[in-house]
Amino acid sequence: RPSLSAQVPPARWHCRVTVCEGKQNNSRGLSRPMAAAAAQRGLRCLLLRAVFRGQPGIRGCRSGVPARQQQQQQALQVPSASAQEITRRKGFLSEHAAPFSAFLTDQFGRQHNYLRISLTEKCNLRCQYCMPEEGVQLTPKAELLTTQEIITLAGLFVNEGVDKIRLTGGEPLIRPDVVDIIAQLRKLEGLQTIAITSNGINLPRLLPRLKEAGLNAINISLDTLVPAKYEFIARRKGFHKVMEGIHKAIELGYDPVKVNCVVMRGLNEDELVDFVALTEKQPLDVRFIEYMPFDGNKWNFKKMVSYKEMLDTIKQRWPELEKLPCEEASSTAKAYKVPDFQGQVSFITSMSEHFCGSCNRLRITADGNLKVCLFGNSEVSLRDYLRSNATKEELVQIIGAAVGRKKKQHAGMFNISQMKNRPMILIGG
Image (cartoon, rainbow, N blue to C red; front, side, top):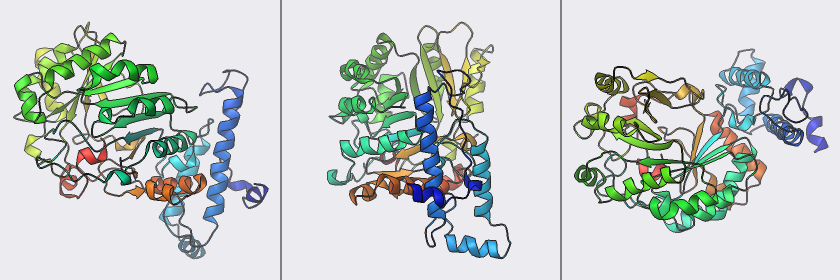
């Protein structure tokens, strides 16, 4: 609106973009129409921020400090933490030619272009590290996000710069309309990757349809290669179905097929070498995940096998194991490869060597709450705002406020284990 631009001093415009013909001299490979649209989006974000920042009583997205308090601090000429955070975020954005939504950039310059959406709280397994033995209290169906609400929120995030969405659960493949959800997500312009994390039980039956609908990438959970032990960990049968699902994914051309393995002392740490051996002749990325504390999973430090201990064990068998360069700054995995093996292995070191500094992930739970940190217990109900007929602009402001409050790093494994948080199954991983 013309009235918006009139309220914004030129000094607050910190977004620049180079719009080029084709892909020449364009760091993000944007065509002229795409770059122009992106520039307009970035400008709109900054305009809205400036307007809301200037209204007394409105909490700014960047800091959460009331505007009146900021004005009082400035009047006393005392540099406030919120002012420093705003300056730091503006400086980070101004250094990047291609615009990225200020609403999805936190006070530490982390750009959140990866959204994880939980489709359901239900699961056909009862894995020990994910769900309490007695189960969980499920949210009534009416309080879960509908298909249209999922697509609406996804579109909002993609419009602000998210280019990767991962569908999680519970077990996402037990949701009856999962294929339709993926097909609708595929229509969102700017969304490059649609991924899913599954326990693999329903993959043999559904994967051909999922691929046709537009599924790009897949992670399959498998914590043991021993059928009897699988039943003990998952408290259900299904090992052979999971293996069939992995082979189906390879058959359909997924490369790599990522296999998630949560390593727990006294349970499956003796299988590390066996998992690595799987990568010799198959395009697998076996991802060893440090055991993490969540509500009800009886986490104990003594059960956790650290990344370095796992690495030492594997190097005893393959001393030539080599570390691979990191493909993306925001990657959570430390990747390694045995020379001449087709696949690779990775380590998710959330506990022993956190990667909070490069985190680019946001999560939406099945009941519509936004979590900016997997291990944080702060949540914002986007569902409630959506059902209260909030406008898209208001929703973006709410999301931006939550992102702006994201902390520099999680509290550490010992503090996390004492914090009240959802069980993993109610978060969505």
